[in-house]
Image (tube, rainbow, N blue to C red):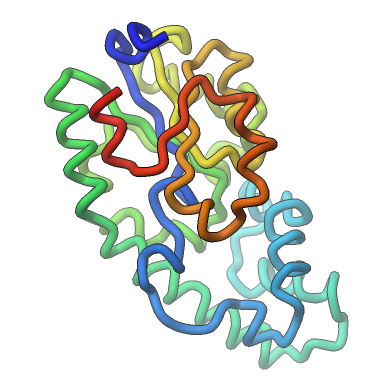
Length: 230
């Protein structure tokens, strides 16, 4: 299995909770749920599981994205709070991603020196990733596939196939690195990727979720830099 990693033509990464999260990056401020005055756990659940339209790019307006999720929890949340939360969420994501660089960029550069093509496959809405396009690390990627732009979400096979086709590689000669959210490791492995679970961020956020994701990982790392060792 290690030979499959060493001989891989491409390495694909997830973005959120793999390479970046607000908490791990040190971006300060309240979460969206705090501004809206709703339970954080309920907000996170609906954000990840109950907002398919934003992830597929069906809804791209930042206010409507927040409105649809918030009103599932509490229809009485006023429009002023919706707009405040949406504006703040946009600026917070922009600030975090725009400054995303070292030390992860050093790992990406080393992989490129080894001859690997580098791709990104991320479930994301149009607002979350505005800062990505000005991020220093974004220039190191040969291909970027965001779900809102293609209309497919992980673990659907089409989003992986679009990414593979963009780099002209096969799943069998590719590695997928992610935190395992959205069943992304399951989807990648079914297509033939070698899968690597990174727990660097989620071990602080949701350590209880790690055991259920382990069966779908060919390798597990707890620091991003360990990719070079593999």
